[in-house]
Length: 442
Length: 119
Image (cartoon, rainbow over all chains, first blue to last red; front, side):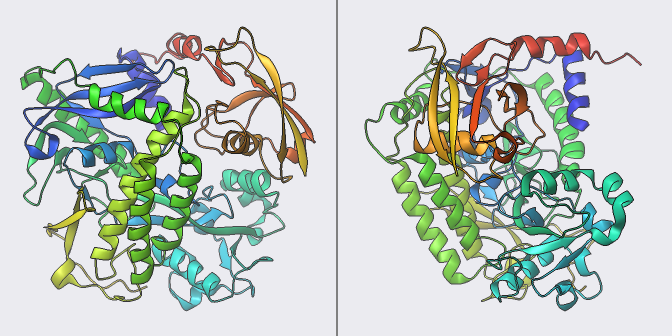
C-alpha cells in the first residue's frame, strides 16, 4: 500500500527512476567519506548492458535496506544484501550497532518466509514437540506475545534441548486451529496462504512448522536525528550524505525493535530525509567530479568478470549464510562468535579469488550476485566483530557467557570501522532523555 | 524425484534466436520452479538468467510462462506441474536474455493507467 502510493506520487511529481541501475560505488569530494569529504554522487551499474554511469549529485540518500541474506533462514528478499552499508563502510564510515539483529520467531520451517505476529496477536500459540506451550517457562505473563528476541531464544532453546517437533525435532509449531475458520480466513489470509502453498500444511486442521528467521537489522549506517550520516563518536556529519529506512541506524530501535516500528524508519525518517535533502540542496554547491571516478569499481567488476579460474561465489555465499546463522544467530556463545569472526575472515580471503562463469555484459546476474556477496561479507565481519566485542547481553544480543546487561561499560553504541586486519571497534554514548534503562521482566 | 526441465534460452551476445535446452534436476514435490532454476544456475549453468526477489509471491519479479501459463516461479510447485516442466519468458514483452523480459513499456504505462487524481 505504502509502496504503491509512494511510487505513483513520485511518477506524478515527475521523479525519474533509473530502474535496474545497481549502485556500486559512492563518490566524495574533498576527501573520502570517513575523512571529511562531502557526498558528490554515485556510480550505477546498468544491469541491462553492464555499462557504468556516474551520477553527480549534491545530496545522496541511501535507503538500500537490510542484509538478511547473510543468514541461511531469512524473511528477506534476495536483493537484501546490505549494499549501502557496505559502500559507506568501504569509504571509511563506521557501521553502528551491527550486533543487534532481529530474528523473528515465526518463519516457515526451512524457508524463513515470515508468518506475521498477527497470528499470535489473534491468539495463536506455540507448541514444542511434547505439545506444550513452552513460553510459560520463559515469559509466563506475556507468553507468545513476549518480545521477538525472547520468543526466538525460547524456540532455539527448546530445539537445542531436544523438545523440537517433527521427524528431526528441529522446529516448533504455530497453532491457530482453535481460532476457527472465520478468524483464520479473514484475519490471517497471508499466513494461511503461505502455509498451504509452501509447506502443504492446512492451518485450519494442522499446526504450522516454524523456526526463527533472520528478519531485521537494528544497526546500520549511523545518522543523526536529521537523517544525516555521521562518522564518529562526536556525530561529525558527512555533508550531503543521508540515510533512512532499515539501512540506517538513528538509532530508534536500540538493541531491539518492536513489531511494526520499522514504519518509523520509513514514514518518519524517510520523510525527514526528503525535507532535509531539499533544504540542503537549495544551499549547496554542485560538486565537481573527476572524469575517472568510475575506474576503481570498473576494475573490481572486470576482475570478477574475467578471472579465468576460481571458486564459485554461489557455494561461498551458502557457506557464509550457514556460518552466520549457526554462530551469530539467536543464541550466541563466545566460542561461536569467535568461530564466526575467524570463518568470515577466511571467506573474505577466498572471495578475493572467486570466479564468475557468466562472462557476458548483458544482464549478468552471476556477476551481480558475486558483487553482492562482497557486500554481505562486509556486513558479516562488522556484525561478528561487534558481537564478540560486546561482553554483555542486551536486547537482541544475548550471549551465555555474559547473560546480564552491563550499563557501566556498555550503555553505548558500537561503531565498527573497516580495517586491513579486520574491523576495529569504538563506542559512542547512548543519549538518555526521557526513558531510563530498566530491567526487562515479563 | 527427477524432473525434466526445458528452458527457452537466449543469449543476445551469442545466439541468433531463442532455443530450448533440457536439464534433469533432482527435486522434491514441494519445490517451486524458482528452486529448480536456482539449482540449474548453481550446479549446471551459471549463465542461466532470471529475475527474482521476494521468493514468496509478492514482488512479481519471477513471472514467467510455465507449462503454458504465465505464473510466478516462486509459487508454483513441482507437485502441481508434474515431471515435465517447460519454462519460457513471460509472453508479450521483448526478451532481453533467457527469462528476463524488457519491462520498459510496462513501466511507461503506469503513469497513464494509474494516474493519481488531483485533490
